[in-house]
Length: 390
Image 1 (tube, rainbow, N blue to C red):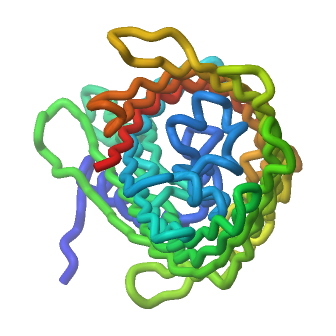
Image 2: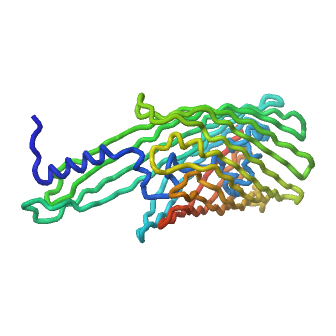
Image 3: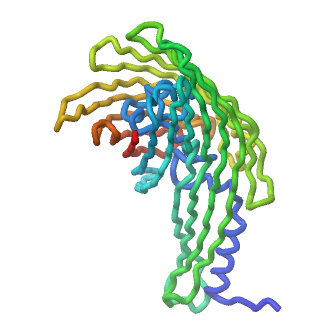
């Protein structure tokens, strides 16, 4: 027999059931712009490249974008980075500040003659966010004060790209490469409801946890061409295979395809100690539409960036590299017919240690995101990268 609930207990049960029954797709209204849909596309850029606005992505060995760029690692190397984001969202006159911690890239490479084999693990999209909503419940007979229910919805995880690539330095002026990509990851969604009234600790918090897992494949290839001593031209593309989203271990939520992408970049080195670069990148985000279970859709888009890497002053017998850059790109998701866009301004430095056996890179990106009526979002992304050459 099911016991009869009275007063606050009955209201707590109603709110808890409502939280459990909330469709996963409706969690798109999570109180921020950048992680709508499947999540925020981090960019798969190294700290070094972030400092230049992403402009060197096609020739940067640490960024898992163009497999041909692996040839420029030069020696056995390891790279890892930490990128916390400090986000501010303003909607309907209310401002909310959050911090999201990310470890978006781990990479390593081994040169074998004219070949370089590289393995990387990077974040394709990140769906980490949290929001709290407090409502006042209807008064029950005998109440002496108002009762509030707080619903917390929290999402962690995303989709990651495990890439195994190989590059061949065919000549002094041409490198080509290819890679296989395995896309995997989880998105854990926690919903919790707590009731506050005049009797502290009277009711326990009600929680519901669901897990969405992903699995898919893809492949990529690219080239780096040096037609002149002062000029490099690079390009790459990725083809995406099937990707499946499952609830728990069994229920299939959707079958889609990994977004394809293509891009190109130019690097000019005709000024001593100065590198200038420009890059364009197209991504077929619309392939995610088959996985979308809410009112957020996806649209293909083209982004661009420009940047510079300057050999700076010597400090304690170390040459400091200075970087500046910026760009604009679509985040893929579309709300009410308007694409979410991001404009970035970046700067960074690189400092060698241990006679060049280690390099610490630091970058700071100021990101502005627009596309949702009545809401604005901006963020600071502080990236710290460590590259080791044993």
